[in-house]
Amino acid sequence: MKIGIIGAGSIGGNLTRRLTAVGHDVSVANSRGPQTLTALAEETGATPVTVEEAARDAQVVVVTVPLKAVPNLPSGFLDGAADSVAVIDTGNYYPQRDGKIAEIEEGLTESRWTERRIGHPVIKAFNGTYAHDILDKPKPKGTPGRVALPVSGDDETAKKVVRDLLDEIGFDTVDTGGQDESWRQQPGTPVYGLAADVDAVTKALSEASPERTAEWRA
Image 1 (cartoon, helix red, strand yellow):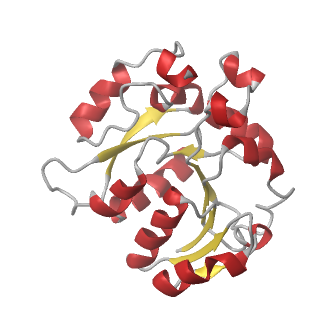
Image 2: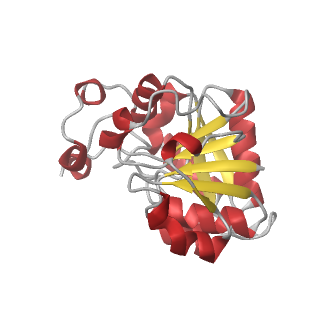
């Protein structure tokens, strides 16, 4: 599968490592340019590209940048992607980093905000996953205690693509619902940062509150 990754920080870098390890054709981009991705490319076999080129012909595009950087993504950066492209949003809103975003402060979910900025539906995944878990936690399908990740989104076809991809790289998944329910996996909720199996993740999602916590506001 052709996959584009926009953002080569801890999450983007380890997704590049894991996805190439299972045989996917990965292009990776960051804000500093492909010349800064030489080491990652040599390590993984991924192709370093510009942000404008990352989605070209991609069936899956991962957007893994700080929320404050989302409005700065190039206009039309998804135009060259496959018609049915699934866009994964790994982002979280941290007011102390991103500045106050009024719509999110007033209750709009983070991924819904991102959708409006990029003009395309997204599937929220990996937002509460520690970067090292992407490499350390994968297990074969059916292994007892296999880590499950929450996944939300309105496009059921794209969500299935993403859930199948996560299964391929070693994780079970739990469907959080549509993006209006994705607050259940935002920072400060019981599932955020949880590395546990399907039952534990399902329970954590059910115990979430839409109220913003002191932890989230810190």
